Image (cartoon, helix red, strand yellow):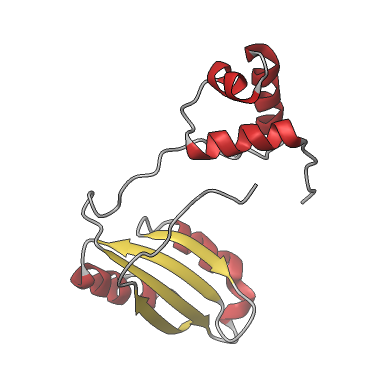
Length: 155
């Protein structure tokens, strides 16, 4: 993947969009000293380059009833490590899994999982996650307090 070169105006645009993705090109341009059209063209260029991947909303998981967040370290069998693609495809089908990262080290994957409660995680673990082929071990850590959560990069 190639790094994309951006200038200071692009950085200002990205910082504003990170904090409020609903801002119009006109509003962004006004804040950074650029008229609407050049600002809009810059935003489109950043999208086309793939630097802006998506513009979504962030929801409060607890207000939606997802009170439990679990970080699960998954270790595959030695044979299963040759099937990382299959494991990734299976994990993508689980809506409870918000993030899945392939790791180097003593475990193969780190998953961030949300469920309404511990009992729902227990069901997910026994009925789905532990049933995946080649899963050797899962170590789960329950998050007590979310100290910091952001999607904003330090641009």
